[in-house]
Length: 211
Image 1 (tube, one colour):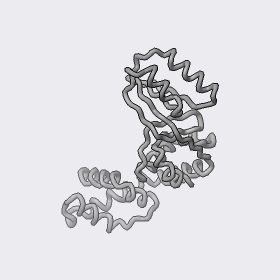
Image 2 (tube, rainbow, N blue to C red):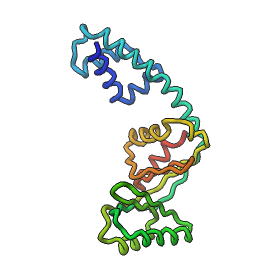
Image 3 (tube, one colour):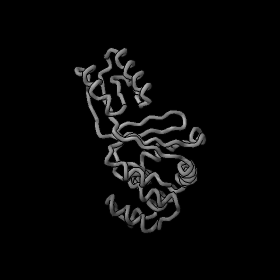
Image 4 (cartoon, helix red, strand yellow):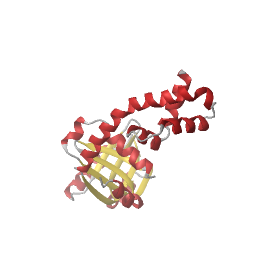
């Protein structure tokens, strides 16, 4: 029984459309039970009741997620979306001369351009506009690990409720993933959530962000 429960929960978790329908109470449990038995190749007659019970238990686990999802969508409906194109993301080795980077950042601020520095354990990522690419290449030519060009920055400006609401970022990640949009970088600053994606995906992204 325990093994059947784990297999059933794993199956539902790996099929987001089924999990979503389950959360909303839109599932025919008998049909789902038959489908799970067929897909995981176990005897339906012997395991029908066990799978059915596992499905109903899983619903009790995730039904609260539906309430949270409604709150998340409410926040996103009140959010504003801003898009900037001609963005680059350059990954540098950690052992660079920081003064050069900070001087670039100062110049960008004077021009009112974005210049974001993300420092990780093993590398530094710069997210800025295309006009700084030549300068970055000249200053750090031997320290560049990766260059991503033809990107766009999508900023979602949300109300303050986002601070106390869990799951907003994971909801957005799943939304982008379901529509085949790869996220190059993610950042946040207070109520702003920033995604860096390919320019070619902007139209698709704006479509799914209309709540």
